[in-house]
Image 1 (tube, rainbow, N blue to C red):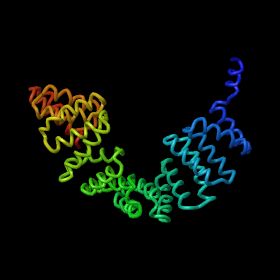
Image 2: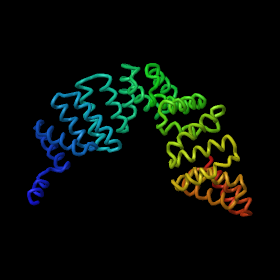
Image 3: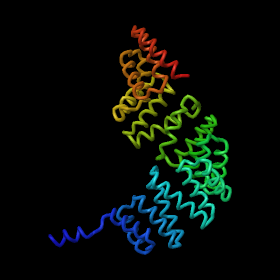
Length: 339
């Protein structure tokens, strides 16, 4: 037993391995740095600090392919971490200077975008895309910065060029849908989001975007409702699937008999969703269940104080309940928020 305890204590922890690797890297002992950091990454495969340190180590060892792979893992596991973002920016800046290529330009652009330097990022991402317009990653990354600046037409052009070579790339089709939505070209956006669902029904974003356009769905409504039914069948406790199926059915029939149960189940799973409470409140208002409607609409307003419509419907419900002062207060809130 004592031997096993001593053996356990002799094993370095991932943190100790990382510290040893960083000290070796700082002193220029690349072999020791590599060994310690590789062990740290093996022990904790999602440790972005280990991967970004390995990227620097491999770069100094003149192993650009290994360095690039390690940097990609650091980028994946360190998303949102400012320390990792700064380290990657330094790494990608040196990599682009030492090994210039569209891939290096694109990686540097992504890193600049993560650091909040949108204008600089756009230059490098545009350069990468110009060098290889059919590359799906380059098109996706460049379109992201264009969408952020609301240049929806250019973003659609970029992804459409790549889609000509990669017609079944779900992320590109999704991005095209987002661009068309931004252009207010709702029919084209709906067609794109439905296409994403056909390519990969597990991706959640197209269902959510379609839920924003149900009043524009027109002839697509039946197909969208069917897609929501299949989504819910695969994910019976997904509150978003329950909510969106209810909304789709109500869009087709405001008196749909199944919608209330769907909304109540959605709320039972995710009570803090303001939209589910709002939709249930409006449904109960239509059924003249005034007290229940008021309770749901009040909860919706509590959960999202920036939304105007719960206050609009609350004013109507309070009028029906004979509570004129409350109705007037809700109208004032609606007018303020709707400006």
